[in-house]
Image (cartoon, rainbow, N blue to C red; front, side, top):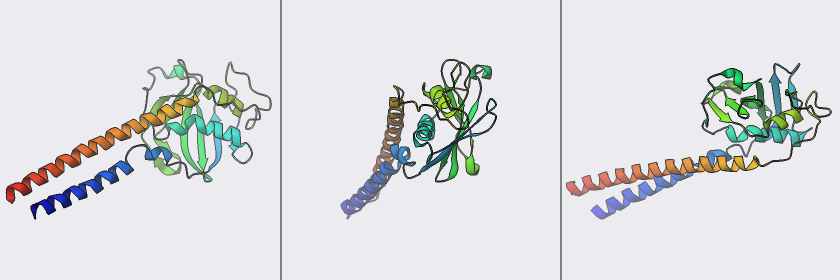
Length: 216
């Protein structure tokens, strides 16, 4: 009788462990796969009007802009807010529309000292709130924004760049692996979380088995 009871507890713990392994880790990295990219908008003090890049009209450029920030949606901060905000240079706000609705907002600093920076504000479209965070952006960010029509100081504007791009779309550069490393980093954190769940479950089952043994 005692063995059956302990066996049932261990089986229940196994199911709980399996559920934890499925729900934790890199699953969130694929949470955006089912959403269709609709458009990307860019605003900034140096822009006379909002730039709108439609996915159905400029799919490559729209996808390139999305690649600059999509790996930051669920990522933890990898840098601190600069002590001197003047070192960030001009700020541009990029909003991503998925399935026709604004879903993600980032403040971008392509000409920041020490390399491009990105900030994920707590206030997101649709009255959503997330954990804010500062990041080292991809080195390709200035080139991608310029291709979209953003007149960065010291960066030539591509032909036809006004009003939503028209210049050559930058090819994926050496920065592309950054997304892969970011995913691996999230996967590593997920595995650590899963490991913590395993330890908690095993410790709990051990305690229950000990109490049952004492009573029986």
